[in-house]
Image 1 (cartoon, rainbow, N blue to C red):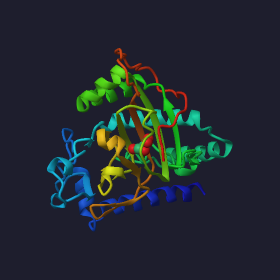
Image 2: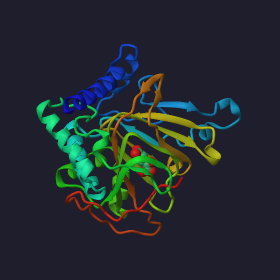
Image 3: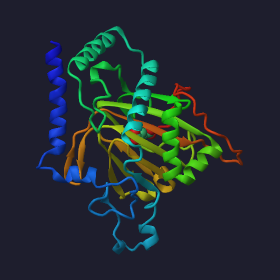
Image 4: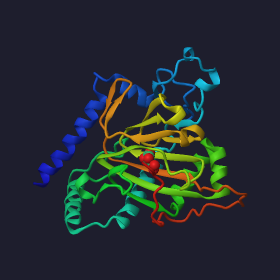
Length: 317
Ligand SMILES: O=C(O)CCC(=O)C(=O)O
C-alpha cells in the first residue's frame, strides 16, 4: 500500500511537471525562466516575457486622458525570484511548522504522515524548484473548508508575530532592497504578518482587503506551486483586469488604486498567456503595514522566531 501511495505521489508530480514542461507549452517554461533577480514588473511594462498579462483595459480612444487610462499602473509591482531557493525552503519549513501548531495534527493525519515520512526515507524525492518535496501530500494536513468571511477555500492560515532569525533577515533584506519605501512604512507604523497555505484544491475568491484591518499596502511572497493572481477593478476601475503568474519565491505588492479599488483572487488553476497553470499546494506570506492615520514613531521588527499571533482577518468579500 505504501508503494502504491508513493507511486500516486510520483504520478501526480510527474503529471504536474510534464504539463509544465510539455513541448506543447514551451511558453510556460520560458515565462518562468526569463526573469533575473533584478527584474521587477509593473503594468507599464507588459512585454511578451512579462509575468503580467492584461485581460481588459480601456483604450485611449474611449475619450479618457492618458493619465486616466494609466491610473494605477505603477501600483502593482511583481518581483520574480525575490527570495533565493535556500531561503524559500527555510521559510516554508518554518511556516508549515507554525501552521501545524495552530491547526492540530489529529491521529489520522499523524498516522498518514508517518507513512509518508517512511516512504520518503525509502524513496527520497529530489528537490523541486516549486518546493513540492517540502510539502506533504494534501491528506497529511487538516484543512479548513471555507473561511468565515467565505473568501478562502481549502486552506490553513495563521497570523504570525515574527520570523526566525535566518528567514527573517533574508526576507527583510529582500524587502528593503526591492520595496524600500514600503519597508520604511512598515518600520515606522509596524507590520502585520499572515501565513496562508492553500491545498492543491484551495483557492481565494476575489476580494478587496478590509480597509481598516491594515494600511496602505499589501506585500505577498509566494512559496510552492505556480498560481495565477487575478486583479479586477471595481467602482471607477471597473472594466480593468489583469493577471500575473506567481512562481515560488516571487513577491508582489499592491498599493494605491490596486490596494483599494481592485479585487485580488488566487485561482485554483487557470490559463496564463495561453498556457495552462495546473496549481498545487502554495503558501503565501502576507505582510501589511498597520492602519495608522496619525503621526507615528519608529519601531524595529522583532526578528525572533516565527510563532502564531492573535487571529484576525484582513479579508473582506
Ligand atoms: O495568497 C495571496 O497571495 C493573497 C492572499 C489574500 O488574498 C489575502 O491575504 O487577502
